[in-house]
Length: 283
Image 1 (tube, rainbow, N blue to C red):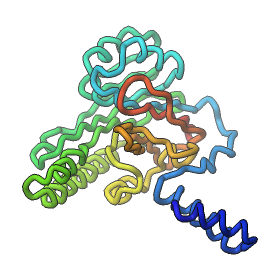
Image 2: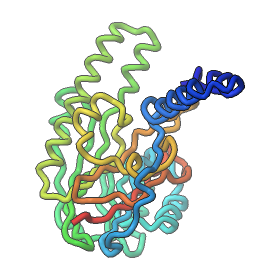
Image 3: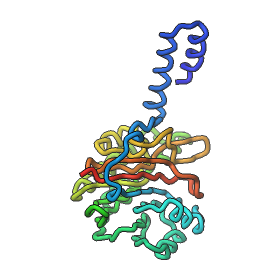
Image 4: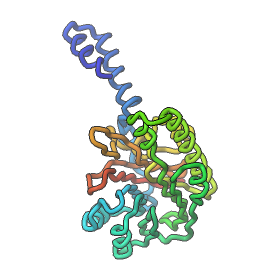
């Protein structure tokens, strides 16, 4: 993408408009395809039924990285209908039951919601751990404003340790990466199968530990709509690791929903940023 910038400048100076147009196309393709820039095309469409709208936030709070006061401030400021939390630390768990107007479910992943929780089902971690994985997947049946909804909170395994082994040059790093990729593919396969066993309409939110351009994501999750890609604007980075910026936290919906808006929220103290998506029942 970078070479397109000087190409564009030179082309304009020489009034070579065809070359300039080509440079613009290369730049846009790089932004949208390679770097996951979202133009927010669907943001222009509005209407529908406001009574069926649901505000979803997903946030990996990094254990106890988010101060309790800031966590409560997030809830009060953005007023989510459903907040999916990953790496739910003790301090956050202690805050959940004290927030008026909400009910909660706590564990390594937590859920805070305005809606009655009708049922909670957890996908047994033995299915993942036996293969060397570490995923958490929990499905909720919520009684929403326009009927019951299946909401799944996911925290899938990270490829970080495999790449750290490669950087250290330790052992069979390439084999470790291949093995870890296979494990993560299996996790997504099992998680998606679990999601599909729900009755719908379905929402899946959480820390997927992969961008939407990942082959694993495309294989198992691309048939659902990514909220930020549908209605967000910009790169939407959610993972902050030094100079590395990635969008690995997602809110996905099936065809029972229309995405009305999406944005990445400010930093509240974790090494992830919260993602907020406003959705509406499509039927």
